[in-house]
Structure formats: C-alpha cells, structure tokens
Image 1 (cartoon, rainbow over the protein chains, first blue to last red):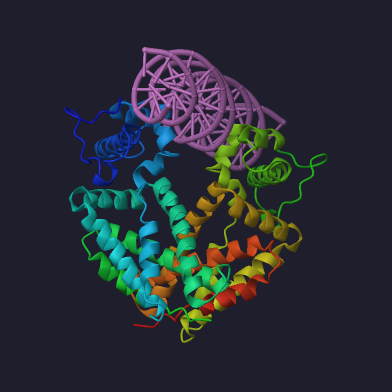
Image 2: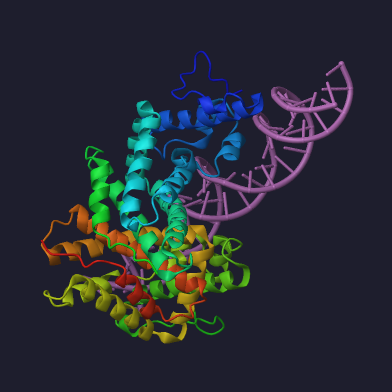
Length: 216
Length: 216
DNA sequence: CCATGAAATGAGAGTAGCTCTCAAAAGATG
DNA sequence: CATCTTTTGAGAGCTACTCTCATTTCATGG
C-alpha cells in the first residue's frame, strides 16, 4: 500500500536504526514517511489550508483513516519531530556545578546542531517550511505552542532536579515556561527573517536576557 | 429572540456604559451575553466537549448561525474578555524613569485589580471556571496562548518605546514573550491550586525571576 | 406615522477534520 | 500451512465552521 520504491519520490528513506525491525515495523515507518512527504509536497504546491487530509491520503496511497491513525491531527503531520528526549539527555549530561543558564545554552545549541547534522539535506529544508507555517498558519502555531509547553515541563523537571527544588515549585515552572516562550519567539523572529540569521547566535542573545536560576 | 427578561436568568445585565446606545446595539450586547451565559451554564452542567454549539444556540434562544456570527470559534465564547487596552494604558501611564520590570509589576497588578473590582460577583466565578477550562481543555488553552501572544506584541511595543528600541528588536520581543509565557504558567499554577493562592503575590514572585530590561 | 434603506437573523446546504465500527488483508508464529 | 494478531480500508456519523439568500427587525427622513 505505502510502497515508496520505484516511481514515488521519497525524499526520506528508512533510517538505519530501523533495519533490524520486523517487516511490520518497517512498513509502519514507511507509511509514516509517505504521509509526511505527501503532506509537505502538497503544502508546497497549494498551501496548508487548501490541502485536505483526503488529498494527503490519496498521494500517500493510504486511506484517510490511516492518516488519522498515524497522526492525531492534521497539524501533527507537519510538526512531528521529537527532540525532547535528546534535549533532556543533553541537559542532564551537563556538569552539576555549571550555572543553570549556561547548561541550557550548551544543551540547546547541541540539540540544534545534532538536529541539523543528523540529516542536513532536507532536514533543514523542512525546518524552514515548518518555520514558515508556524508564522503563517495559526493552527500550526497553536499546536507548536502546545508541544512547547510539553518541552517546558521537561525542562522544568530537569531544572528542579538540578537546583534542588520541587518540580512544582512556582519559580522553576515559571522560569522554564518563560524560557520556552522566549525561545519560541526566537524561532518566529528567525522565520520572519526567512531563516537567514544564525539561529545559535539568536539563541545566545535570547538566553542573555534571562537571569540565572539560583539554587535552593 | 434573545430577550433576557422574565424567565431567563441572565447573570449578567446590560452594563451602564451601554444605556445610550441605540436599541440595535443594546440588543446585540444582550444576545452576546445570552450566548455567553448559556455557554457557561451548559459547560458547568456537562463539561466543555459535551456541549455543542447547537445546544448553546438553543438555550440562548438564537440560531447556530448567530452564535458563529458573534464568536469566531467555540473557544472564544469562553475567553472573550479584553483587558489588553487596559493593560496598555496602565503601562504607558507609568513614569518613564521607573525600572521597566517595576512598571510591568504595577500595571499588571492594577489591571488585575480593576478586572476583579469591576464586577466581583461572578466575574471571579467566571475567572475560576475559565482557569479550570484552561488547564483541562486543550483547545481553550491553545486559544488562550494565541491571545497571550497578541498581548505579548502589545507589551513588546510598549517596552520598545520605553527603552528606546525598535519594536522588532530581538531582545524586546524575546523579553516580552518570555514574560507572557511565565505569566501564563502562573495562571495555570494558580488554577491547579483551585485559585486559592493570592494571584498578585504569585505574579510578584514570577516577575522576580526576571532581569530588568535595560534601556538602550 | 409610514415608506424606504440598512442591518441582523434564521434556515439550510455544504465542507472538512476527526471518531468509531467492522470486516478484510497482511504479517507473525508454531 | 494454519492460526492468531495487527494493520488497514470502507463507510457511517458527528460537529465545528462557512456561505448564501430570503425574511425579519431596527433606523431615518419625509
């Protein structure tokens, strides 16, 4: 059904990490990517709103039901990329005596770097499209804000642990979510400038507007 | 159609400010309030998701079309309250030589105070319900985040003016949105604690985690 | 007080996102 | 190869939301 061999131009190929998975799992990954590729292509052609899930399904050679089985909502097809675990790991790997803000800076920089070098080819291309959509399409921006708040909780937990606070401590929560808001705005700023600025530098400037979070 | 005299128990009555408006305008305010009251009542009875726009229309004695004519989306029925102009005015009224963070603190406090004393009776009641919805219903939270980003732009412009920066300056934008993110988290924290904490105090603690925004 | 114009409403059809169910197809397993 | 499990497709159904058009309701000037 979702065979991406031959005719269909799949920009994304099955990652190495999945080679040893059963046929079933591999097929699932294929379908997933077929849906995402179809979506990106259609959006580039017609824009986000004009692209219906039915069209996506058709181009990906799956049924509409399947699309919703893989992605809970249309916006999620565009936004699905999970760097949260990576960020969390990087953050926890920072030395415990390093200033919190500096740890954040390093972890975020490294996470971005990894994301880009992971697959520089179209990964960056998709990042730019995603950034544009984030600025232009309210639904996408909304969804991204939601996912940012998830990342915020994650950061919150990590920072709470680091500074010896409860993860429900107002200050940590507020600090983390403030950070996320600022970083999201940074992305928007970057996207509005057609992604020409140096993102890591923008992030540095962003973090510079924050206090360090003191330990307890 | 939307007569709220007699049987219908309208918790909200036509505000004084509208007395001199034509019959047409007054009726519009009435329907608007009828829709909101119906919505709040139904949500209290059945929850947000179980409440359909059709039900709302029926109880407000209005057609579904009219509901959508008054509110662009279902979530907006719950969230429509515009304190933005108030906040902007208060912020601009602060002395120009006051530290930015202190101005923000005062302006926000006063805005909240005004909002509450304006109509303490059910205004607070609705605020609590709204806070709960914000925590429980993703759509509502999403919508609120959107409106927060509008407020953020507003704050951004005011702060840019105050500190002699361009309103597109990365630092001001990031600072403003960081603030909004933090304040939203404060509201969530407050709502999670069943609105028992002293909100102004929480806001103070929140702002205390921020640097002051330096002038240019 | 009525006639004319403007605005608000209701009715209804239509679209699209999303859910749920159930039977058929495809992969895993012994 | 037979059986069990997972995945899929087909389709019905719900609801938020949009658009159009005829009807009603208010505003205004004579």
